[in-house]
Amino acid sequence: MRNLKSFGGRIASRDPDRQIAEIHIRVALMNRFNDLGTAESERVA
Image (cartoon, rainbow, N blue to C red; front, side, top):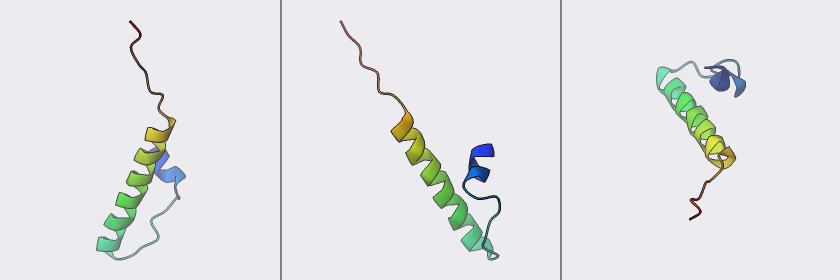
């Protein structure tokens, strides 16, 4: 929840459908940033 708030403290939209879309966009951004920041590990034999 803290990470969701870091992308903006409040939901700007008043329409419920737009609120849902705004939250989906924020979650997609968080997932993308997490993917970029996660280290890839490879098994060395």
